[in-house]
Image (cartoon, rainbow, N blue to C red; front, side):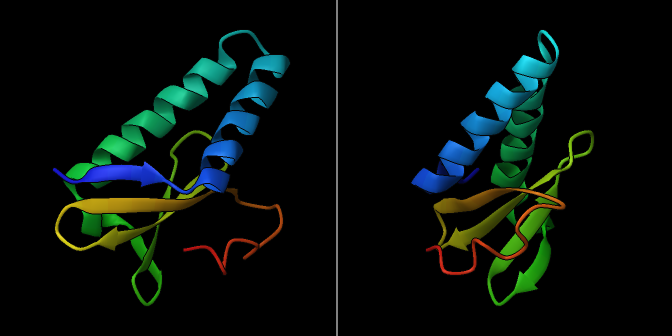
Amino acid sequence: MKQVVFHPLAEKELIDAAIYYEGQEPDLGEKYLAEVGQAVSFIAQYPEAGFIVRGSLRRLTLPKFPYYLLYRVLGNAQIRVLAVAHHKRRPKYWVDRE
């Protein structure tokens, strides 16, 4: 299983979305974080599972929330999540992230 690390801006996106959902309905932010956690565990175990966006960049869509993880597999040991992006907001804002 590979180690998954978040780009600092991806981590901020994750936290901001969780805060938003928690403000909409009690425990919804926790459900969102749990779903992201499941997705992270999945890509740690199956790093090639995400849809190839371009080059080595992959995308894994969350099943219940309108977000996806954009990530790169770095060598044999690590996956870097570059963005936790909403399906319909600011397309491709994350393009220049490493």
